[in-house]
Length: 248
Image (tube, rainbow, N blue to C red):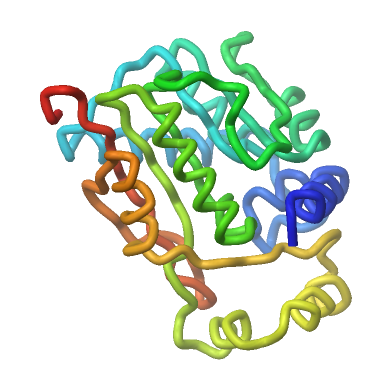
């Protein structure tokens, strides 16, 4: 699996059900998400995450934030309430079309297509905050780790990262299916039985591995909290930072 397959699947999802594909809720299938409700869920998430960063003593600058895998812009809009500028990047043009439709930021969010295996469009030390939630698990692990290295590169010293990703499958029937069933079978079940417009491939990223990749670039994890994941996955939200020259 490479970026071409990821782009194709998420382009189809963005064409068919962009809001549901971002926030998978069985009750919201078939256009069930209200635009305002969808954006409000993003605002609640960002407010809580920035509050947790502050509790940890991490107070990044408020000039520029990166929303990696921005999808329909749910979190980009929320970040724009706290940062002077926000860049939302996504691999699917259809998702970016929906993000621009929902843009309530007054032009402070720049939505960009990024279908490269890196963030070469951005210089070193470009962002005060890098935020990504429920995105990296859809990428092959080596590719996800490459993006983690890029997050550290584009982050300013003293900046922070918030990374939400499944740590491992839960020891439940559904979790074990994802762990042991071959991907072609899962793909078929998602398309034929569950009716997904396109399959959503999943890969966990254990905390120890994520911490090691970040540490190689000088970043550190301050805290990891369990959050949404249902009975399939144990999801963790990691709060990390890149110390400045004085170790802060």
